[in-house]
Image 1 (cartoon, rainbow, N blue to C red):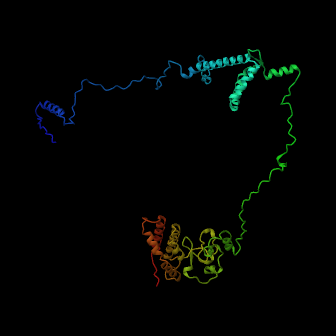
Image 2: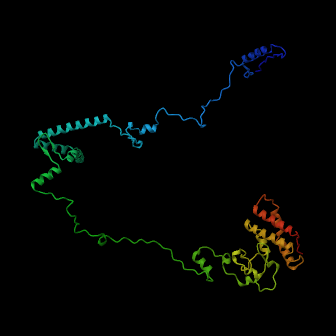
Image 3: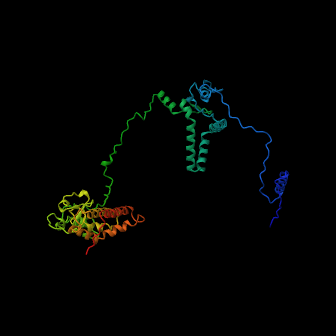
Length: 423
């Protein structure tokens, strides 16, 4: 539904502008469809003054003056002698609550009523003859069960014991109205002492074991306990690692159910002397594919390779396991490993070998050794592997491999960047 508006005109040059404007605003405010109106400024009714800052009392030291307390502190009130603490606040303790008067009165009334019933029963028993007492006892025994009678007797004994505790401690006797006298153990002992008869003290009599008492160890009447059998595994024979058949005996002793694979354990066997002849110092000539290098790219001759200790980390289970160092075909194979750490070692070593080979450390480019090393690099596709891993720009794969491959390519270009192609 469209709402019809109202148009009005304001003359800014006329003095009656304010009047017309106020009339139009009032008209708009009265309209139910105008929810938001203009802001009206009202003149202040009275002249307001800004608040004055607080005034502090001046002191010579610059700090507020000490204010004296009008009443003593709680600590002083607690320790005052007027509170009964004697000057020591730590002695104030909570007083125990007074017993409830209603509960005390209730207990007293119960005891008095019980005492009256007891006296009445005793008086009735005193008036009865022995025949009447026996007859009444027989009627009770025949009309009640044995279990109920036993429970009533136990309850009567317990109640009588509770009632006679206080007179027993005081050593007094209890008199009944019938003239019968009830005595306690203390009175009985005193009367027996007066008669001249003495009762032996059970604590003074020595305790003697019965004659048929025997220790359990000497008694042979019980049957012997059955023997418990725990199965024990057979003890395996001791194996000598120096035995030539150590691996076969190890498999048959500890892993008889697994299939045997001697090739998987060949690295544990001592190397064959024929294998070490591939890089022996006694050889006069070596192929370039058998030349070994250390991790810095330096050439290791056979005499030096046989003297390097195994702790350096240059020994492996390839050809000539007793000789230290890696050949270029072994490094090319290691550069395609699935383990990033092995690829990093291969990239770093190959980059240093390429730098020394390009700068002529191993001889001129037309030398037989350099041509053979370049041929091994070409056959192992070393440069293709390095450039492919360095071209990834670290987007995918291992970051360390990308860094070492980039460094190896940079060393190859720094050494000249030459690439010998095999014919």
